[in-house]
Image (cartoon, rainbow, N blue to C red):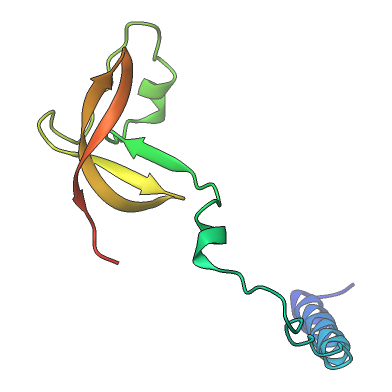
Length: 118
């Protein structure tokens, strides 16, 4: 019967073997070719058309699981952020700006009040 130590040793040997196999395979890869002569470089104009996910976070709340399962239509969840505080504007999950919620033709929007550096 194999002990925990034996299983641990077997696992370590398997990891070492897999690591070595990856190292050998990586050394056999051909180098990437240089850019095609005369081809246009990927410029900023091209990147400006890449879509990004923009999310506006009004607030957060931590509640016990027991309270969560009791939520029903009409339930209220109090958020940690006060009503007068700006909302966070996130791009691909990173906060990039803050703003205030507005309505534009019966739809919600955000007026940017500050942009975070970098």
